[in-house]
Length: 391
Image 1: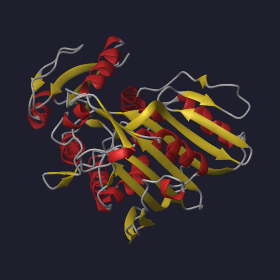
Image 2 (image 1 turned 180 degrees about the vertical axis):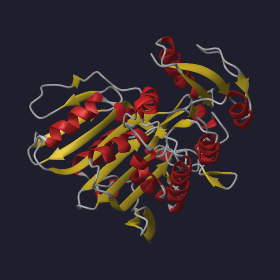
Image 3 (image 1 turned 180 degrees about the horizontal axis):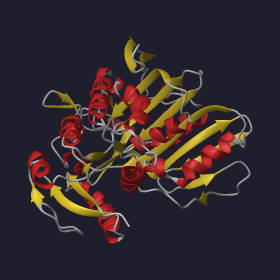
Image 4 (image 1 turned 30 degrees about the vertical axis):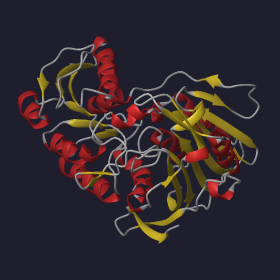
């Protein structure tokens, strides 16, 4: 049996707690050994014990870990990942990996320079239900795919936007942060869609963004990506939802539809009476450690996220999200527990996903016209965005 890989976690508080539990589970099976925890604040209690550091560079010098999980604000990902890779460690980098095509290109260059591995924390890509869906598509179960969509309706209170200095911000210290529904909590939804249409790159984006608070980013969005084949990919999501829609990925085919509820790994194919849970999700850190040991393919390498980042880059040039208030919303409770719900938003988002339409193409009175951008391939075979029209 090979020795356990020595793993450090940078960003041990907040969402880092989820990673600490994942590392603890793998440590119990002998796959990894927790070598260090890093956070600029005092480390919160957790299921682990390891040396604590407040500076990741000091930790790298003192510990020399084999692999590092990076769970820090998105605008810090590129410099921290660069430090880790150049120190000789492999990386599991939280999503979104980077916030622009230029940053993606820079991190890719560091990977070529160092020869290290970088897995991106789109954990839903390890889903056995996704693999079953992809197999079913290849076998023709839904016929030819004519489009893909996703719908999700979650709820976040005022306190969510006070969880950190970058929460709800478009930029931090002059660098993109993009902490909105599309870029952060519901990013998994449309990364799943892009995985389904792998090999059919985005060539255009139509984006409608909305906000119900004094924030700089979207809490509700409708996004339509045009793929090179001409097929549409529609993303309709909100953090101001009514009843919760966990997150459904809908594959529209000439012989029926398939629906993947990605957070729960439940799948419904044409002919199924109901959803079926498909067990067997692969842990991305364990996959990274296996890759180190024997070259097993990474599930979510940085290169796989290039189309995601090209679309995400559109948010950097997009107009400020349209503000929704007054009779359009319902407010409940007192801050920081106050919630804001958009009336009828769930039905509107479901209709957008069903019809592969933008909200502005539906009878939604508060919808505004889209920001449109073209995406083209460069001579280096990377993607770049070109603004077409602004609403």
